[in-house]
Every structure is written in C-alpha cells, then in structure tokens.
Image 1 (cartoon, rainbow, N blue to C red):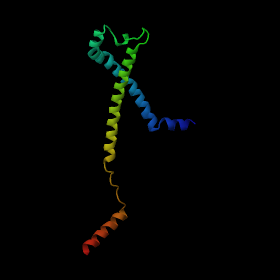
Image 2: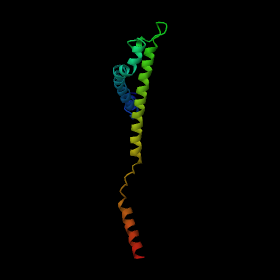
Image 3: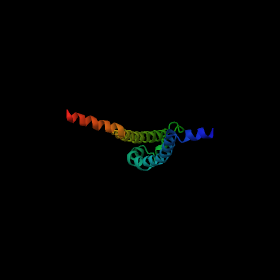
Image 4: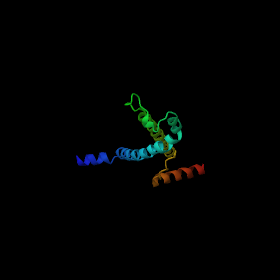
Length: 126
C-alpha cells in the first residue's frame, strides 16, 4: 500500500498540481497587494471620496451586508483567473512548439544501411 501511494504521489499530475497550488497561493498575495495597494487607491479612490467613503469595505446595505468586500473579492478573482489563463496559454504554446519539432531520425541498423548502399550501387550501374 505504501508503494502504491508513493507511485501515486510522485506521478507527474499530482506533483504538477501541488506546484500549481503553492504558486497560486504565493501569487494570490501579490494580486491582493496589487488590488489593495495600487489599483484601489488609483482607480477607486475618486469614486469612494465622492461617495464619502474611506474604504471599499465601507460599502454596505442595511448596515450589515458588506457588498464592498464582495466587489473587492470578485475583482481579485477576475485578475487571478485572467493571469492564470495567460500563464496556461503560454505553457500550452510552448508545448505545441516542442511537439511541432520533427522527431530525430533514428540510426538505421548496420544490415539495413548495407542493403541500402547495395541498392544505390545497383541503381548506378543500370
């Protein structure tokens, strides 16, 4: 059973998935910072100031439903999804380029090469 688990865990897809999850978590902090520290102050600050709100999280309905946080989370998700789409698209393009390369020609066995040379010599004599 331990051997089967080791085979499963070290299979390419499982390792790729683990790497993807770790990179996604790390990338998430970058995107959160981009949104909270760069985009929100640049793009939403004028709108929030006009509405006399200091933060996006201050947007509420009935004082309890904080739809501003929902808008922020949705914005985060769209950016993360788009960037991951671009990354996957780039990886797929790279794989297609590698698959399009012709396969290396295998060395012919010595007897086949000898027969080919004999055939070519016979063609020259005719």
